[in-house]
Every structure is written in structure tokens, then in C-alpha cells.
Length: 275
Image 1 (cartoon, helix red, strand yellow):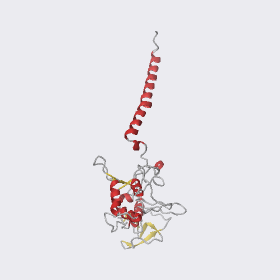
Image 2 (cartoon, one colour):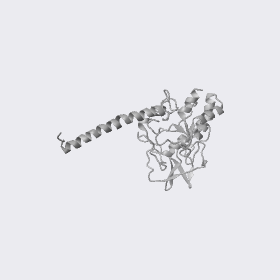
Image 3 (cartoon, rainbow, N blue to C red):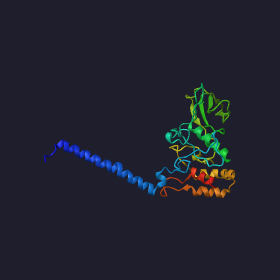
Image 4 (cartoon, rainbow, N blue to C red):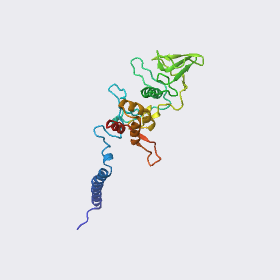
């Protein structure tokens, strides 16, 4: 039999290789891995779904229609993903520790709260909800960033719009003014003021900062412990029973040394509903 031309033989060999690899990698391999995943890790392979409540891998908000925390539930950490825990908009706030000055709304333009003011406002709200002090360093009592803009002969509490009362009356002998929306304070020297808040605030850090993905379903055991008395009171349960449920839904460090212990809020709240 006459041999095929060399170029044609090479093309046929390539086509055979494509066909074999398509069968191996496009059919057999996916079927085998999918089958093993369903047998060995059924829940994880199907998105860790929990009845009609979504996935245990994605956080949820436990708030009412007005955005107020539902008191009988443990609250999740804040989320910067869309309107909160939106898998299609997973993201962080992309704001860093130097973001301490608010942009006040003016002339019909929407303002923007700095990361510092967001943290301060969340800490104040969490403190009020749990009945503890929400005070933090560099935060004003009304939940804004304690930041001054200093000019020659003039000082402005730049995150407290008028008619708010500035958190300090004077700075180095100069009266402190409230901020007037629309004024440009960019030229002033930025001076964050630490205040006398404790170095270890009563409200944990994960109660006031969003996760990097915006979807984290976990909170720290410290934040869960802070919320336990409120949840126990609202549900008429013994505090020891609520603490035991927290312990049951706490996962340890990965391999015993990576990461930190964490509490899955959705699973914990579902366990509370089940009694």
C-alpha cells in the first residue's frame, strides 16, 4: 500500500491526538472527578447548600427590611460585596488605613464615608446593640473619624458636618469648627486624634471591618461571645445553652496551625431556630 504523504500523516496524527485527549480530558476525567466528589464530598461538591437558606460558604445579613439587626439572631460581619454578600459582586472596599477623611455631600452630590468613619459608625452601632462601649481609638463619640484639618489660625473637625458639635472644643489653643459641606479642606494638615479609648475595644475588629471577599460567612469566637447574651435574652434561652451552640459551630485552625478559629453564623442561627 502506498504510504500517505508526510504532511498528511502529520495532520492525521494530530487529529488522532486531539480525539484521544478530548475523550480522556473532556469526558472520562470530568466524569471520574465528578463521581468521586459526589461520593466522597457530596455536600461540598453541591455548593454546601442548606435547605432553602443558601450556602454555608456565603455569608448572609440577618436584618429587617429597614436594615436594622434582628435581635434574636447572631449578626454577620460587614460586607462590601454589592449590597452585601452578593456573589456576583464579590469584592473588598479597596480602602486602606490612610483613608480617614470623609467626602461630605454637597450640591446634590452624594458623599462618601472614609474607612475610618465606617469603622467608627459600625463600632458605635454594635456597642449600642450589645450594650457595651463602642468607643475606639480615632473615633468621635457620635461615630465618625476623629480627624482634624489644621490651617493657620483655623482647625476643622472634617468628618463632623455642621451643625454637629466637634469632638474637641479647641486644638492647640484654636477653636475647632464643624465641617461645612462644599468647602475644600484638601490644603489643610490632616491630624487624626487618638482620644482616650482603650487599646483593646469591646467590639472586635471583625464586627467593624468587611472581609476581603465580602462573602465570608464566619465571625470570630470573640464576636460570637459578645452577641450571646443578647441572643439568649431575646430567645428566652439559658446563656450556657447559647454558648454551647457557639462551641458546636466553631471550626478550629486548618491543620491545627493555619488561620484562626471561626464561627459559621448561618449554621449557628439555623441551629437556634431548630431549638
